[in-house]
Length: 84
Image 1: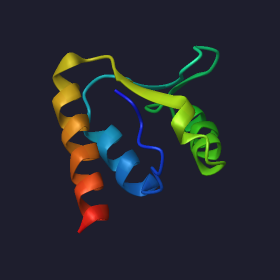
Image 2: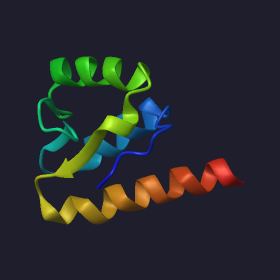
Image 3: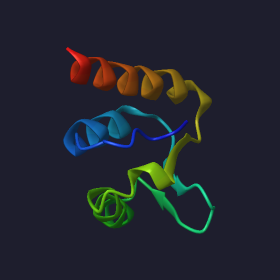
Image 4: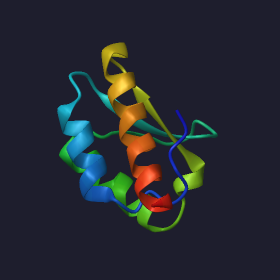
């Protein structure tokens, strides 16, 4: 799933990742970079990339398919909050 370009709600994103059962990967669209958001070290590096306004270059992948619906709802709710 594509990461929202303006994913500045990092705390909410990390909270959503923590609720997932399996690994959640942040992967660049060109496939050169991949960060496991369940790993604290990888998370810090990934957050640095997102804070550089590179969010449109990354996608989120849930390794446990049961987590996909949760993450999709998270991004839907986040987008809905911005519109309201």
